[in-house]
Length: 155
Image 1 (cartoon, rainbow, N blue to C red):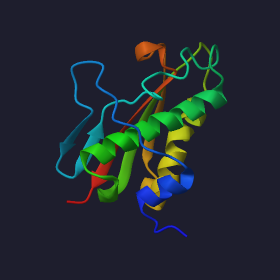
Image 2 (cartoon, rainbow, N blue to C red):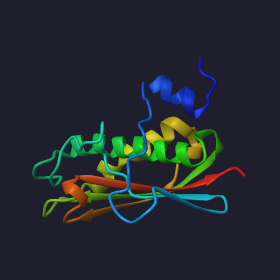
Image 3 (cartoon, rainbow, N blue to C red):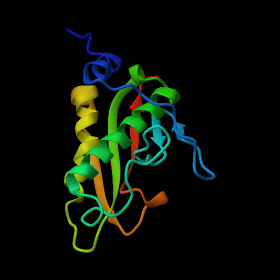
């Protein structure tokens, strides 16, 4: 039985947090204002590379994209851990997910569930959040998904 901490839950899920990806532009990986941490949008990098590129509904299947949203959420957790430590997370307030979508693809909520589900798995009730899931024509580097978070932390 685990102690219920985020680190224990990650270990139980077989997830090791990666290093925080370097910003691809003129921005910070996170910004804190009071007890809120805002993450920059995270792509589904694995060992510094995207596992796939393209639009969901064309080159990328929705179920694959859901897994990429989960990988983006793992990168969000790495950012939060580097910023303040996962044990200080009080609540995942909101996720915003972007899905590079083929014309006519309307399954963005199902894709971004990959990120939402991971937050609930790691933080329990504190991982349940408000969310937007938005279809876009293109994302940086051809990524199929990008996810960002607003997180409330303990002082």
